[in-house]
Length: 219
Image (cartoon, rainbow, N blue to C red; front, side, top):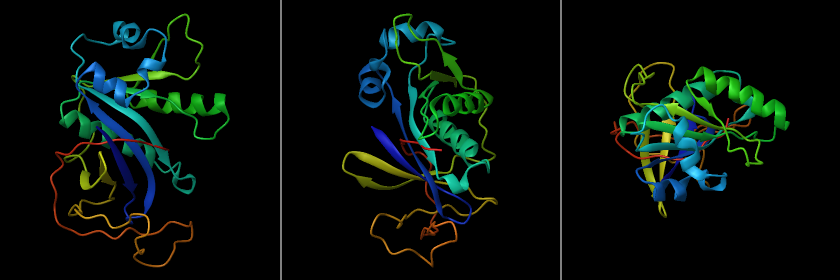
């Protein structure tokens, strides 16, 4: 099942969102990731994986950070926190399809590939007959060291249809984790609009378990 992740900064303003899924079988991966759209499918890429026992797979579908909040390290922190969360759920390998999010194609792919490589992601080689130029990347997680100083800060907040919604809070200092997220569409914002157009998100302060599922991402 895919999870929608809302990303908040230390002021509890929404600065981005993401989608991801924990997949324990080829069927689940096909339902939650685009691997079947590439020539050869998973069978082609698995020979490039660092080990054969790669299930479950953390399928990282999308991440988006609002432009006013970029170049502040939020995307990198969110990447690591989300990977930590799925690793704690048992993921042994991550899969990521790069996007450009409106940037010029070559420029967008280049800087994202460079950034993600620094975070441990490895570019996979497409099949010789594949016409797509958008890279797929994998993240070895079997022996990966968690990057979070504490447990992952992903928290399940509500259920929408068949998709779990989660919140990722990136505080500057350790705080009590919120359990209730009221910043859904139509909810009244807690305070006036900020200069950059962001709205604060109202949160309760009850501690919640991090053993939830997850899904999507922009940066």
